[in-house]
Image: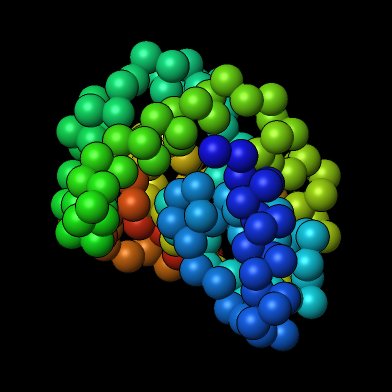
Length: 174
């Protein structure tokens, strides 16, 4: 899994189908949106970034190096496993392949997956960032402060990426 490469592929696909769109992503999907907003600003009309950051911190990289897909799935990803199995009937273990690829990002050089901090100020699309104030992977302050989001609201959410119970932070930049 190379997030910048995925973003480039998504941009190429979108250019054949649409002129402009609003995008919503969660976790790694939101990380891809940051690259998309920088590489193709004319394509990205707006972004919703859920449970994400613009990089993997050293702490998260260390944590992910110790995890297996099964350990990662024990937490907030049980719903994802059920969804993968329901939609990939012929490949019921696809969830595991995705988790292995995600965990492998902990050993990628920063530039393979993420924009540089100094680049993020070039993002011009209206951006909504949804995050849990105690997200175990991505602290709520990181991307919000970098994108200079003006408005913040607290919503109810659960662990990383799953809406349930607990405080989440919503930030909007127009």
